[in-house]
Amino acid sequence: PRRSRSLGSEALRRACPICMEPMVGDARESFCGSHMCCRNCAVQCARQQIWEGRLPHCFEPECRMPAHPLVAMGLLSEPQDQEKYAEVALWSNPLLQACPGCRLPLFVDAEALRGCGTYTCPHCDLVFC
Image (tube, rainbow, N blue to C red):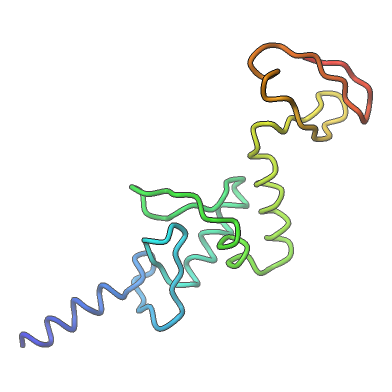
């Protein structure tokens, strides 16, 4: 009885905390390097997060560490998912702004963000603050 209880707790430790299915061999993934889940759940989490406009991050509520870009791209095998990830990653850069005229992206000077710098869009020549 004692041995079976030990095996049961070992099986729980190796169960995916999301779907509760056993994690076998290399079918484990981690967004942060510490918290593990099965590959299927990691792929589903990463896809859901990017399509909600968020960069993939750890599923553990107390952690929420962002996934390294190589980890995220490894989970997102579909070309449309990888393209969406690149878009979300690009727009998460605080130095990237959209021109209010043509809506095309442009980088702004970090120093100018502290005040009201004047920008001229190289695409449509709109001058804005």
